[in-house]
Length: 467
Image 1 (cartoon, one colour):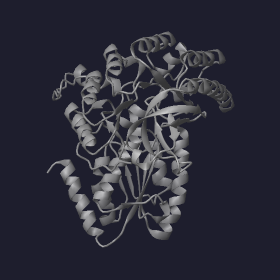
Image 2 (cartoon, helix red, strand yellow; image 1 turned 180 degrees about the vertical axis):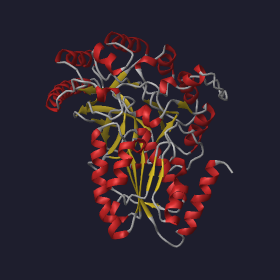
Image 3 (cartoon, rainbow, N blue to C red; image 1 turned 135 degrees about the vertical axis):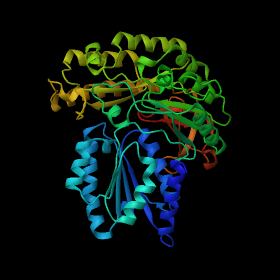
Image 4 (cartoon, rainbow, N blue to C red; image 1 turned 90 degrees about the vertical axis):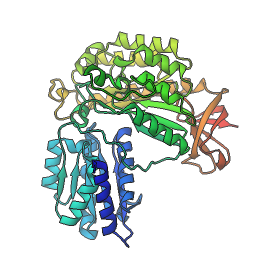
């Protein structure tokens, strides 16, 4: 019996234990799309056990918190949530499980065990697949369980999954990271890079296409280094449809019938090789919005961040991509207030933003993470100063949005219709290739289709379209 079959055995045992009961679970996901994908697997596992999902925490018999540790406010959110759950535990005897990246941090798990002893299960990023066994033991033996390992876990295939959408799906292609950016905790909690086998990825996408999914997002901490470690270490991987790199993976998925769009997150500028740029340019299904994390526009700060490129190299890469990829648009991540960053160095970041005119900018205040080199750096920036710089960047980005949006007005855009608008049930919403939200009037039967719309007006955070 392999590991997944063994866990299915425990799932069935729990289903038998819960027979004739209507038990509900609530799951809260914190963090990135990789965490979202992990939560979809947890949902699949829980429904295999007979639990039903609820979006109302107070109705749940089992609450699962899937944590992130990239930013400090994630800790505040977790501990605030545990304060709420303590009351539910006392009133209704619910089960509480906490998993995800934060559980790989020893100081966090120690604090939970000391200050929140009512938590039933702690599990890490490498032991998600064992959730059925851990829940069974917690229910049967009535004791607290901790299942966290420090080494890199295997990549387990065949876990059940319940996806949040029936139109768009994410597919993890690799786990872990080898970059060790000085501000980032991810390599310490997700482990080193391990790529999934090409066949497993392609077969998963083919199955999604059969189920009617239109858009696929390929996920990894550094997707454009897919299979690099395996090749450098001469680790054999089963060849499949000519896939031996990220570029060839994009080309293979581009050929799968039924899939209309392919996106990917997140790449690293230092690994944007010519073959990847060429694949984006020539694969008609690969969206021409590319997420290209900048983090800082200053070469000295980038060196301190261990990003392995300079401002000049980043701008040269942008120019090369613009010359090669038709209709390219770019999004990025920027960290404000990295230790030691001066006003002049921050101005370099603003300069890159002015020059590139990103379609979307995800802005973050630098957040200290215990265990990272940046946490030990002197010259930490005062919070007040970070906020002043953040607002400068925000004002610049927002001043560019209208200019970026204006270029869409009067054009025809292909839009994947995702459903009803959240703010107006009489309107439908969808997204362009460049990930712009479009609101328009239309019939419900358009949901799930890619249609052409004329963009008639722009409204800062969305575009208005007409059929």
